[in-house]
Figure (cartoon, helix red, strand yellow):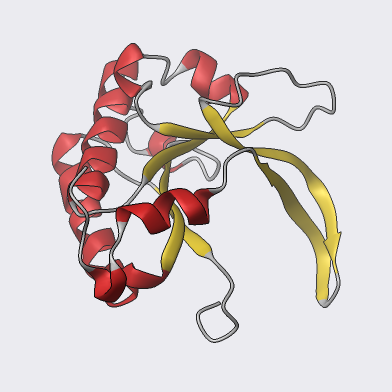
Length: 167
């Protein structure tokens, strides 16, 4: 993406089961992203789902703990100068991580429904299908639609040479 000038962001599938895990996970993400910071022009998202059953197998956290994990990681990403957000399915947003404390963070909703209706100011990205196709990629591809111009928003947050702008 950097070589081709394609704006990109980061998606982090969370394995955190508690607040301490969330802090450690966020630190690892930030350390990994540091060399690329000035190039990231989409949000850094935490995926707080359990698609692979890890949370279920290892002591599924309470909803309050799941919300705490999202908040801890998003705040850490923001404090490091990134635009932070949360990725989840509609079910997860409605059932497990529904909290006013998370309203300040951008949302990327996975809701594979052509008739989906949601607040596009809160949900800046919509994953509308897992049945997409892209030239050069074999198999199904998740397809998404952005409702915000993230590269423009994030470019205003960062000065040239990676110096952060205080807002």
